[in-house]
Length: 308
Picture 1 (cartoon, one colour):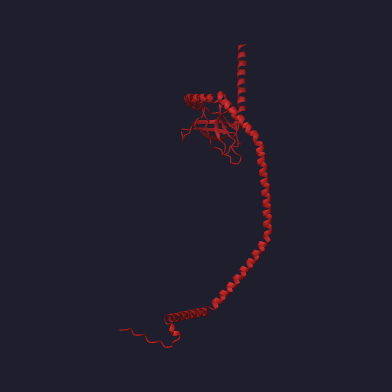
Picture 2 (cartoon, rainbow, N blue to C red):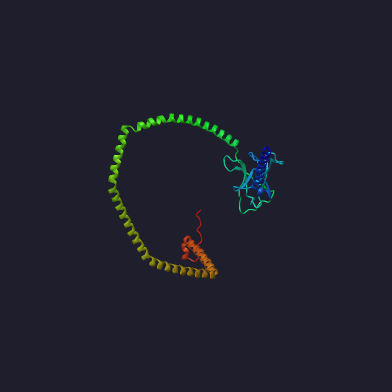
């Protein structure tokens, strides 16, 4: 009996082991065949390790195979992973540390990139961006809280000064809005209402006068336009005649210039003769003035002797 129970227990254990192996094999069947290796680099791996899921656009496409510091730059972590063949990783794809929800394990999340860039060859390095860790977020929150406390203290001091300055202003406002001032304001508003009530008739009269002036100006402009139109043709005719007269004068002047150029020598000779005749006439005139008797005497008398 005990042997039978032992055999049954062993059979159950073997059956459970076979089922678990089958489930594991089925769950990882797509990773057993051909795999395409890639790698990326992060400053903070965030607790990922081998068998961490790799997502492409939110779809599980592979698993991490190795996580270790980079041999060339120990300040960053090299993460090797495999993806299923046909995963369209391209030059614009970016890897980052992520998770499917707040309570899930971290994953490697790769963006879909762009459609107009070449795909990455196997073994290529995928560019990465760093995500904010909880420690960094905590430090930033602490720094923000410290700065907020400083701001609150500063605002409290400023509010105290503002309230101290506001009290005299409020007192002045109370004085301004007192009963006496309210009566003055009411009286001013009443006078303004009365003035506004008397303004419409005056505005109507002013509008009528402006309209009359506008009509008179329109009539004046119309008369001036008619006068200009009536005078335009006679003025144009006079301008045409003046232009013709100017043309004739230019022709006459040109002819005179040609005549003067042709007779310039004769004119110079005539002018020279006139100059000589003028000189001779001047000499005769001077001689007659000095010796008027020479006009009736041919021979000049001898000069008288001076008495001794």
